[in-house]
Amino acid sequence: MTDPLPSYALAEPVFGLRSLAVAASRAPLGGPREALLATLVGARLAIGAHGAGALERSLREERAVAARHWMGALSLPSVLRSALGELLDATTRDDSPALAAALAKVTEVTAPHLDRKARSEMDRLARRISA
Image 1 (spheres, one colour):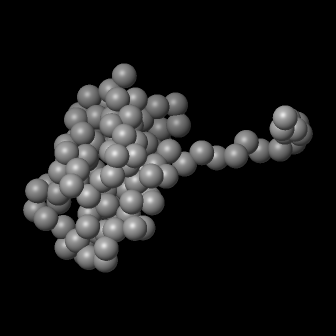
Image 2 (tube, rainbow, N blue to C red):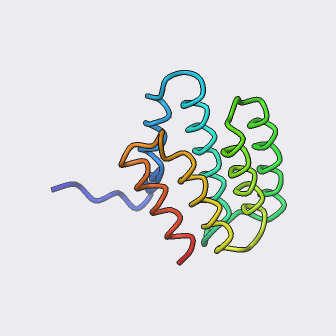
Image 3 (cartoon, rainbow, N blue to C red):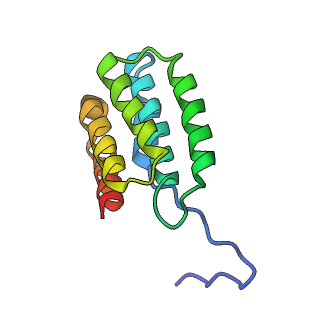
């Protein structure tokens, strides 16, 4: 039996993309790792753009511009770069179906690099956003 948290304790934060982060850390240097890191950044931006904890639109726009700039320095396949661009654009709007569709497209494009757990996290996130 675990002890309950004291009333003054903070809840432990839960990172919902643990398997994706692990997949990125284990991927070989170069293209696969860069693809997974860019996917992780895009998924984190999607989390910040939806739900009760959604960030303000101006902050989402700033983050999308910064992410686009960072991704410009990566050597990503054009199909992934395009899908990530759509995802970044979708994070700046208040359109859950478009955000879920863009996330699903990124998942589809990066599927060869995703293990079963990371793929499941991405699918679960897209379903949560579309609900």
